[in-house]
Image (cartoon, helix red, strand yellow):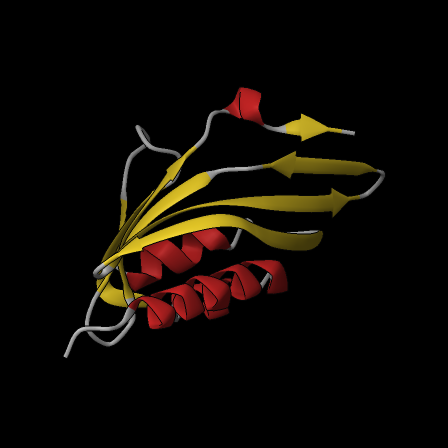
Length: 123
């Protein structure tokens, strides 16, 4: 059984909520055991849920996320979202475009994040 577009959009919502929680284990739980993560694109991919959880271990501070737009085709999605992180007196904002593939169970099998350091603003 393949997932319908609304299910993939719900999975994107779950991902953004997990990122906003700041809890690496919640984010990693959305990935398949053998998933890959490339964030940002061009960096060394992280392979497997344990490596992915370690990557998200860097989440810290007060985090909010907002989905700006999403396109879903079958079990793949590309979406633009905003992440605002408050750490100490600084606020960082970035709007990456993530491209994800999902399996029939709705788990993320691959994620590629398109952004560069100059895309981040600090206030």
